[in-house]
Image (cartoon, rainbow, N blue to C red):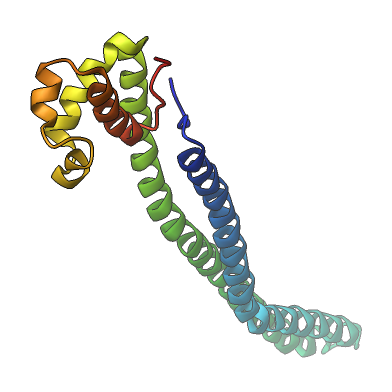
Length: 202
């Protein structure tokens, strides 16, 4: 399997693309974390509400316990404080639910912020890289020595732009049929360059 091109310029671009992908993933992961943390700040009122409910419940419990010792009517006096403490439980529960809801929202927004751009760019990178690897690997298996250049010269006549072929020869097809080695090599180099390969030594 051939992962990188033989040609220095193209190989450098491929390495830069790999490094760029890693930097892209890190940058969006960091941004997703920022979005998560910023969203979690919305939970502060919920935490305040939760603390207030808990504090109110505790104060009512202590007040109820203080008046419960009053002779004859202590139990009746403590009952309203006990019921009021129940309201504190409801407030605490509402605050807890708000914190949990904001936590779920922050998690969702953080992942979406990070994953969408990462997946889009990674998909494009993977498609281009897989295409290159398949093409370069297949070409590498077909070219062992200079005698194999003929096949790539023929492919160049079919696939390469006319202006590129015209720069090689005024009659490239005729010279290919006459098996002119210089023309065959020049045409093969055009095709091999697209696969990121160097031609074998003459």
